[in-house]
Length: 239
Image (cartoon, rainbow, N blue to C red; front, top):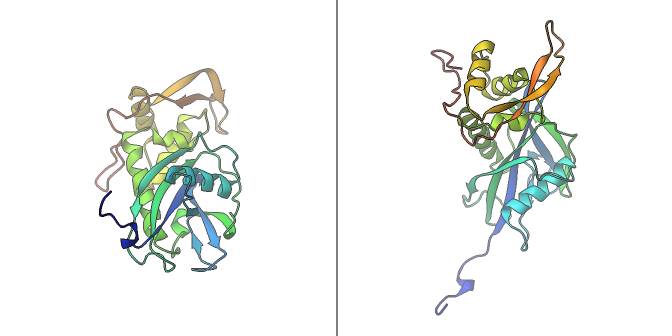
């Protein structure tokens, strides 16, 4: 293009950062890595890395997700772009723009530290504070996105194994929202929402309690929940 000078603009780097959530021991956990290099050596951060010249931001995110979790195939996991973080000075090394993603794992393996991480661990969400860079903000934004999408999509099933009970699905909502739901009301709303879940014919699982085994379900095909499954409010529990 005539008149265009590519050297007139300061170059900058692009990273893909990940807020990876799972449920462990009945609590929402997030994957953190301890930085092994400056800046912020020894501080905990969200996993991520620089986007290579031959890959997209999403490809970089999937590569980093595999490296940090040790999973060889992450194609079936829920991964969605959250937003872009581009404030000047967010990285002391140079101008770095981060494309952040949220990922959900139904049965998370033990964490693996990547090439630039001293170690990695699953940390309860409430204990994940004072992270490096602006990762506190990214993590809070990701938690807000996931909590909101549970209301109007079937995203909660991404936390569950391929076949799950309605009790396990309810636990996802209660854990992410931090609220107790009425069991009969929750069951009624889930089963009355077209395409939310599908029954697995003839399948059941013992739950450890008394009574007959619980029926098993799988994720349905609905892209959106109609009506939405609204979270409880301080004034009263709609769910």
